[in-house]
Length: 251
Image (cartoon, rainbow, N blue to C red; front, side, top):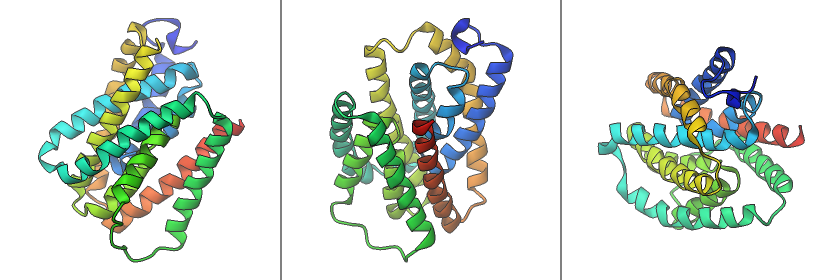
């Protein structure tokens, strides 16, 4: 029975969705992106697809706001100010393109690009290069456009911040603010489109403990990873996320 058949989810569906979210948000906590790409397809087996994106946006937003508040002293305001204007413009462009461009072709292109980028970084690792002068503009626009189109632009911000914020807590806190702002914008669009109602809010709050458990697990795993291991994990997740997106489109 689909989760939305009744206000309180059936126990088997609730347990399945909770397990999916624990895994997704453990990886999200480690890398700062990927919850939608990792959890989207499994959740679509117990929820209508039209509900999965606003549900994950709610959980992402709540989790990111909580994470950012708990580590607010570590937020790098300079990097945040550099990325934010371009990100907002990129979101507007992405949402505009969403209604006009063929989604299947765009999703396949995005998946192919993400896989190529991730594999390139894994197979041809190079010493860290000096940050590009206009990197914030390109990262903000690129992440914003992909977020507006697919709800999956966080990997662009993660790649940008990972090069510039060697202190792990700064990276996590700043990325959390960016994801929180991005998902808040997506929530506004979903609300205006009538995709958020009381039933969805009940489901979101019933699944929130699973998302927070994943976040807690991610923090504790993160303490045991070196910077090189975290970088490798981010690029592995890029490859997995791109492949997952392509499989979802071709299915």
